[in-house]
Image (cartoon, rainbow, N blue to C red; front, side, top):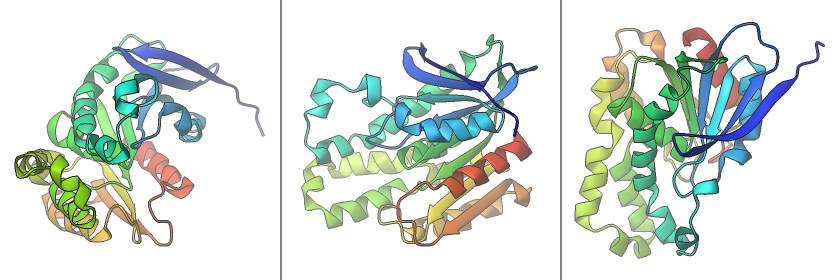
Length: 257
């Protein structure tokens, strides 16, 4: 087996802490893959995903979402868990709005080809991808893979409130409606024919598979290129982004990026 070496740099782009991984001694510019992590974690915990992407020939970027990793504040970390979780939609919207600046920050990079960018995200990261594709997508982003995520925010949130009544004061009706207005499920026309891979667990205790099947039912008719959208269901994994999901996402990127 040929020995491969990789370069890893912990830096910042547009004020966002990032980790970059790239194969060493590459003869040409590489397509770029950006990985978006889930709630309560941070970029360093995604190094295995980053390694898989870099090993497959991608200039890989992982970054800290707002209030995570190097951007975690003492004020936020001291809040009760439910109050922190209630900020997830604010974090998603802020992250979604920052992706294009992050992509363009690599315009002059000697290795990363920002014109061929792919997005992969799990849980909150996948939800962010759905919102981004529905609201901010640029032509330089060629494909995306969302893992264990949902595009149905208001319905999911209302179900969670019924299960956990302590969420009631954190989400008055006005805020619930605001979450609904922002959910990607209401802007699916902007996803039409974009190369999108969606992967979820059938027995996911956080993201009900019924939401994903409803998403597929509503999204699929918008695609004239049926091969550009794919949904994969997994059994017995719960709410986990597995190695198989990562490999499938990389295979997807290899087709479209």
